[in-house]
Length: 452
Image: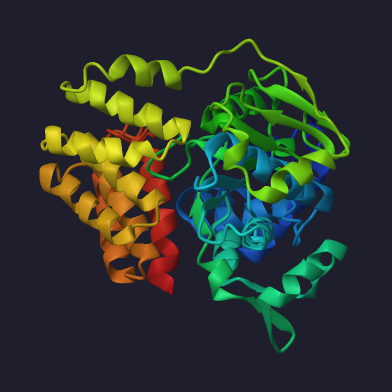
């Protein structure tokens, strides 16, 4: 790649190192984006701008915004949302039971329209209190906008966006989203290319549905492979991954089932829970299946599911705390409601296991039991105050409860504990997250709380 302005190549290299974004064959537009960001920062020297980027997260955020297209609106690609409504939700309910809380992740959510569209779809499908919906992005600026849930006409330009109107209140020339929808989406910072996931700490694990659309186009092939493998690991058995038509194909990057439908090509993690008997289906389910117009084409993978084997083998040795941890994690990844109950029993049997108490807190949070989750996480910290991931997760719980001061304290504790470790050291109980990265993420979560 030949740079027209060679002094800006170092800026692009820094962005690649910090974010994983790749710029092959885009040098002209990248140089223009860097120049715009430098102008906004009132810096005209590349070396000085590099120094700024090294210490100023807001400057890096502005640059990321210039180099990526945060193009989004409500119910973008409506055929995909209709597929979720018509096929994916009923299919998940048949496999996992009609009391199962559907787990979904909007990866690269930008200013939030995609995530809120999912929340509205769940509301219309009778799942208002029966889903776990987490949204992440690399841009703190975009996340701040998403949390505000205040939109203009440009976010409503699609034909399918009209279904959002009942959930909006007009305020001048802007629209505020109903609190009942806002409260059902959790937004957090995550760099798909660099951060560790699946992650119990971030609530990103055992997903029934992942939307990762128009994100992979910014990565090089090596990064795409890593991200695809992590997305695969984050899916529950039988879970779905939806990408955009412009994204690169993933069937050679991870052992997905490839599902070819009129709406596009989609991906699933092989293996699923046993189908429920027909008697457990709502009366209208059979009618929906009768009128299904299309039959998906599956290209199966040879990779077998492992969680069920762990559950079966570990069940005989639960007097060992480490085995009990593996048992609970496997149950959670299978999505079974028994995970929280099994963990509650395990902490009684192993009251000094900080990891079991930590898993119990995470599972309680996933069930929407925030008060109990906060109590359980404080028990973790009573056992071990040095667990940075417990402070971090307590911050997320307290923020969800509206305790901004408590959340700030918890995130600061997490950041300080991680900053005291070597940056490349893995953080205990953080699913492979490195100390340097968790310190950065804690800082990113802390920033909007301190400025609000």
